Image (cartoon, rainbow over all chains, first blue to last red; front, side):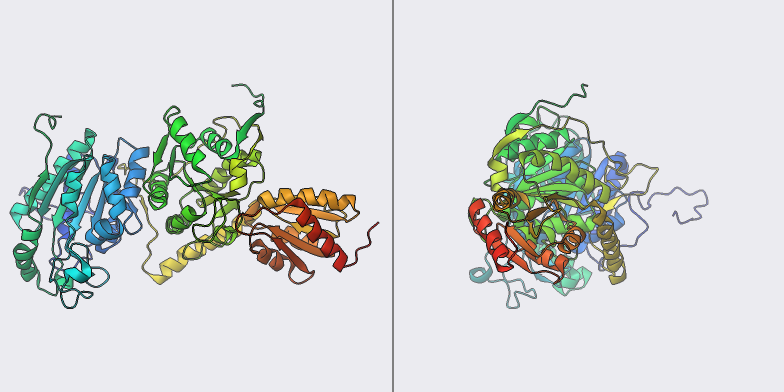
Amino acid sequence: MEIPVATNGMEVVYRKPSTLTETPFHYCPGCGHGVAHRLLMEVVEEMGIQEKTIGVAPVGCSVFAYHYMNIDMQEAAHGRACAVATGIKRVMPDRFVFSYQGDGDLAAIGTGETIHTVNRGENILVVFINNAIYGMTGGQMAPTTLLGMVTSTTPYGREQPVMGFPLKITDLIAQLPGSYYVTRQAVHTPATVRKTKKAFRTAFEYQQHKKGTCFVEVVSNCPSGWKMTPVESNEWMEKNMFPAYPLGDLKVPHPILSQV
Amino acid sequence: MSTEPEKPRMMKGNEALAEAAIRAGLQAYFGYPITPQSEILEYFTVEMPKRGGVALQAESELAAINMVYGAAAAGARAMTSSSSPGISLMQEGLSYMASAQLPCLVVNVSRGGPGLGTIQPAQSDYFQATKGGGHGDYHLIVLAPSTVQEMADFVFDAFRLAERYRNPAMILADGALGQMMEKVVLPPEGSLPRTEKPWATTGKPPWRERNYITSLYIEPDEMEGINLQLQKKYAEMQKEVRYQEVDTDDAEILVVAFGLAARIAQNAMEQARERGIKVGLLRPITLYPFPHEAIGNLTRNVVSVLVVEMNAGQMVEDVRLAVNGRRPVHFKGRMGGVIPSPEEVLEAIESVAESYRIPQE
């Protein structure tokens, strides 16, 4: 339902895209999920592909993504979003298919599905939200949790001899011949928001031309899980997450190849 | 198109099943190699590209069943196949599909277990197949073929039932049925009409609300509602029960067996009849829904019941429930991939007959 707003002849320059439902986000204040959802849905609206887009929601904080995104969606079992997306894309190759997954879903329990889906070069977009923690279950260690980072299951900080290293799965993905476009972005400032939106758009455009898997990592925060205010969490992210997960493109198509 | 039935041909059970699936309008197959059913995957990777379908070798059974989930939820007629250890890996996906009410076909060409077990045929996955298998209150529709012909025919029945009830269906065969060659008349291509699937996620057009497929209902009332809906569906499914009776009219001993065990039991029965023992067979064709009523009714006219299985005694529990204490229920089983011989089943029949002193003419 459209909320009537008296614009008195003024031009509407900002509004909720029709590709988002009226359901308010349940995300914690300051969380990056809401922005990432919106950007993805803005791109779907702007490209006019709502009718041809099918999304796959993960298990994790964004498990209810299908309540917010006004498109056909499937909710996958934990870690299986890439396999589910493969099943959709194989039977409907002309549709735009994406999975939206967190770090635990994509890089721990679903590592096998993620790697093999990209290695097959499935023509899908994988959106990977990396906030280095299991938010929904209460802040446990994720595969991407930084060394020394305190979580509810690394109460003394993540120690390498016990829990190994943070998994830089996006770097791994970029090495696979099946991946076509791999980039790492953020959504905590106007500049990063614009870049992430552009990355989503680029990925969908490549998908149209069946170029292989596009993989967009969004380095994000978790104010609740990190036990910080939203502002503190963004500062902490810049100071600690970005050095470990530097923003930028990890794999871009060859300039000639990318001409579509 | 000719309406004449095709000529019989000799085929392996696994290949007959795969060919039948293509003729049943299969759109997508996802699978992973495992003995004794790898011919199914191989057959599809040869045939599906030629016949306009999808065949994909997944990186695991876990991935395969979730690819089936994605394809089925997008409205495609989809299936997977595996053998016992691989079917165990698929249980998560099956629970999700049962909850999300997605039709699909899963074939279990089962082998002896537990664990990695053996590659020889067994029926020790009966509990897993008929009682749900994964977490939560749900059932699969389960069909148990006993011939290569049924390996082919039941694909059609399985898809028909799966789509009618929006529920995963399983064909529970075994390694022998998968590997053996028999005469089979294949059903004609295109004889299974497509079902309307207005719930499928095919992309949201402006004229309808978005479709989403999920098995998550956080509110207990809502989750109970889904469960009530499922239970209502399972109650309706009971009318789909199928079984075969052989020589039950005058039977004093009722043998109950499914799949390969039923064929062995039938051979033993013929020998027992020659020795004057009045023995009949009930072969459940649907293991879920189970022919409780038919067994209950037959029990009234027999002296004793003998259940023959290739396991430690699984279906016998359902038979006991059906018999409900009215008659003694005996069990003869072999485990771990050992196929019982007709002679040892005959011995079991004779021992039952002896113990109840049925007059032998």
